[in-house]
Amino acid sequence: MIFDYFQNIAFGQPQFFYLLILIPALVAWKIIKGRSQQAAINVSSVRGLQNISSWKNIFHHTPFVLRLLALTCIIFALARPQTRNDEQLTEGEGVDIILCIDVSGSMTAQDFTPNRMEAAKKVAEDFVDQRVADRIGIVIFSGESFTQCPLTTDHAVLKSQIEQIRNGLLEDGTAIGSGLATSVDRLRTSTAKSKVVILLTDGINNGGLIDPATAREIAKRFNVKVYTIGVGTDGYAPTPVNTPMGIVMQNEKVAIDEKLLTNIAAETGGRYFRAKDNASLKNIYNEIDKLEKSKVQITTFRRFAEKFYPFVFAALLFLFLEVLLRFTVFKKFP
Image 1 (cartoon, rainbow, N blue to C red):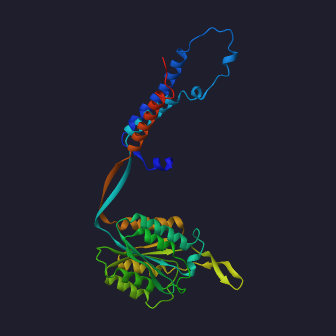
Image 2: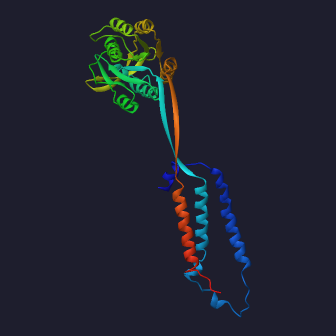
Image 3: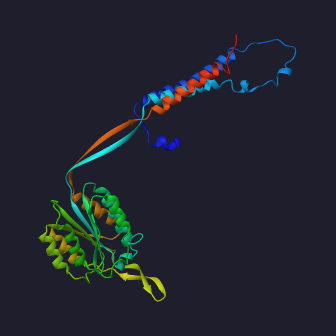
């Protein structure tokens, strides 16, 4: 409990902690003083005095210990323990962004760690954390498309929705046109000056009700910039496949329609990127983050709450106990 308290505490005047050197100094003074006050008495034998002890003898240093504790609490109070609360005021223009993510069966290929889909989810979450002032939404697609999360500034909800993305939610296939069209529809009524779709896929368009060329023209009509990302290594990739014998790993050929993705990006003012591993995928999102900077000003207000009162009360309690014991139980009579 005490450890948790100090985890959230900062000190406004930590230089007062130098006064803690008084504690060992007072202990040393007490020891030296006690030795100098010892009196020598000549007796014939000390055998009868060796076993004389009482609780007063054992605890006779208690008032001094209480005084040290009171002094320690006073020093902590002078150091001004306090908690800090930061509030941010955001002003300016953000960017509306739709993350359009392929969830087809081929996204479970394991040429990324642990697979393409999980790698895509991880970099998407990191990207969301970097875009503090933007509205972001999620569209997923395979044989059809679906809005996983509409545009929102609640990034906690957004990351929760990213975590729930998995293969098998939609009919299998790769409907790039439908995914892009749904993403543009999410941005159609946006009033942001910059509207962006980041479309990530690992395949060739083979389904959906809207062909990619039509979706591209719709994006151009609504001034939506499209960044496209082709995901997959060169050659073949190990992919889990359902068979009558269960799920087995097979090497599947990596087939990405780079010509189509390049055309969509170029026609809408975006760029095409190719990710062949986790590191390159992360770098691509970082580059897009730099290209689409939000014009915002963030003002931080910092407030402090003083927390020295418990130390003051503790010091008063220790001093009260010391005085009480010194003038009652441990009172010295002349």
